Length: 146
Image (cartoon, rainbow, N blue to C red; front, side):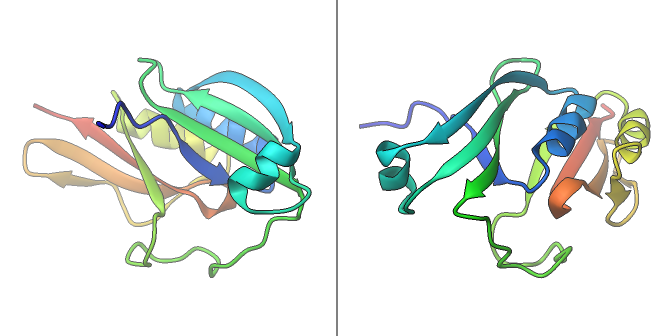
């Protein structure tokens, strides 16, 4: 048995439309939306009475996807501190390669994104930064220089 691929990364959000708009601005494409509910969903996630809306986002190359989910039932819970620092245990960021990092940061700011630190350069190879988007999601951006 071998791994075929990583299919998607799931992120639970409170404002699905704002999260979709943020990732569309980043350059992802909305692949589709659906409402998820039923016994199969309950069994899969280990909760009773699941009802959520999802939006599947796809990178332009078609290889990477994010599943954004807004839970209506049971209500989502917030088990983390607001705006946790980068060294918090657990998964907390997704990184994207971009062509023009300053342009991307400027466009994401129109959707409420803020730099976590600052735009930095690693040797002559990359310009990098972290931005905090909707729901406190940290998105890392990397512009390759050479």
